[in-house]
Image (spheres, rainbow, N blue to C red):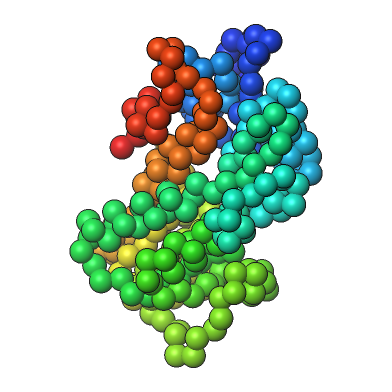
Length: 287
């Protein structure tokens, strides 16, 4: 038996495998492990509180005890982990972001489930709002920014990227092949916030963000402070200013279903049948 910091206990045996994550609140640890247990799988979700290096994280996930891992945007890990994996799907290479690693007999495979999550969220927002969205600006240069560029371009939306650190944004734009388009200076129909600023009550002080929000029609927020019962100040701003708001949970639900589907491949439920994405949606109680 192993007890994590918040005193939530799980059962272990010699065949138990770990699914690691570089982030996770106490509530998410309980939620993930309870869902895995309901499916009858001999797996344990375990988070790491300390910062990890890409080489060190890859080594941990390659161990015989690991089934795989979730990779969050902390410190650019989604991109920097790529050279330490054995095989990476083309989508993850295109977006420069791996958020899911699967360990198959010591060989590490990298995937990106964020793209399907974001695409699901944006399409839902577009259909629900009825708004005509033709241009977008990505605010931020982390792992989600590459995914956002790919998805928005795929949806036929004209894209620009800005952020709090112009130097880092410029480097990301070069990596993704985003070129400056003359006359494409805004205002933009959609603002995709790929930063954690929505947790800060002074988020409007973030460089350039208030100007982007002024004149936009729709906002997507990747950050979810509400998961830990905290205020999402960007959502609050959108409600007060009558801007259509797409919550990060719409992306999270779809990407999590895909992520666990990849991690559960080859595992069966208690009745002997394979785990489906619908099983994951129902067990995690996702909308």
